Image 1 (cartoon, helix red, strand yellow):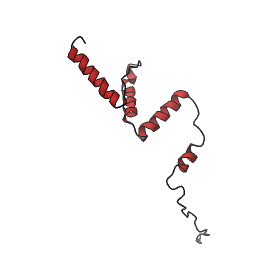
Image 2 (cartoon, one colour; image 1 turned 120 degrees about the vertical axis):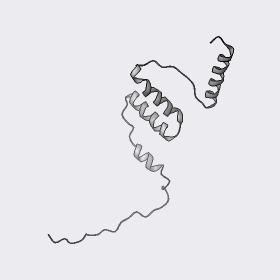
Image 3 (cartoon, helix red, strand yellow; image 1 turned 45 degrees about the vertical axis):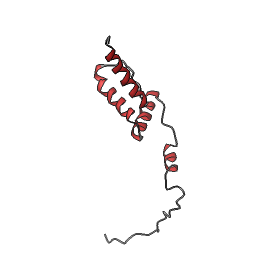
Image 4 (cartoon, helix red, strand yellow; image 1 turned 30 degrees about the vertical axis):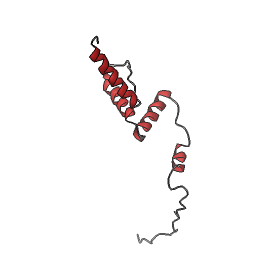
Length: 100
């Protein structure tokens, strides 16, 4: 990259990435995993709840730790229905008579 225009183009590209909160880095791996790593990086860079779940799953798989307890309870407690005082009781019925 001896040409100044090429250097400027690379600098501009890296600046645009930095404005989005992204950085460019290099990893070493098997050729067979190239598409997998690229797809994973692309999904993580998208942001949003899907990438957060993917990040959590990958972190858990890499760390090798068992899943934390109470995750379902935590999700239920974060529900927008908490405090809405819904009546979810059902009447108790014996059922119908069936002649066999």
